[in-house]
Length: 144
Image 1 (cartoon, rainbow, N blue to C red):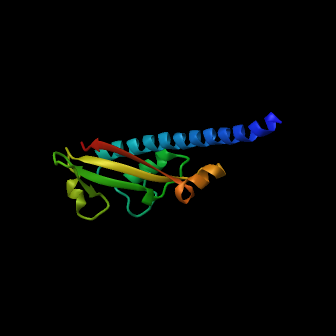
Image 2: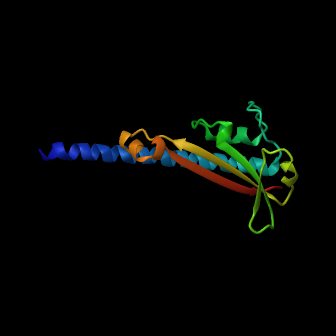
Image 3: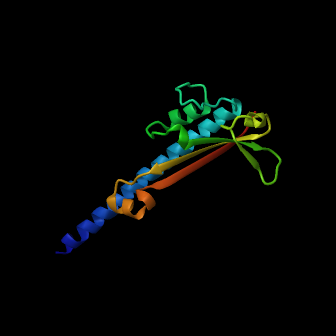
């Protein structure tokens, strides 16, 4: 009798732990991908891909390649130039024409990824707004 009451609770607890583990693994993988994209952008800050092509010589492709098993679209990856020495820091969207003038040595490049994680546990999915959690990761590196 007691086992029949405890087993469903333990099963839900185990599923939640597994779901949290998968979400954390995705977070770590995205952190690494964003860091690699920012590192690439620090050496080639104007290598943007706004055409959704598979050109491997750009920042967005580098982030998506490093994300590996996580499927990212171009809209998940945003790139900003940040002006060094301004307080508060001024950020300019790298995808906007004319903002490449801020891609100079000494300024910084910020790469950001927003990803929607959908839990595979139905009860966690019910707790999440719109059935998913948004995982956002940033990396900033100085342009060389």
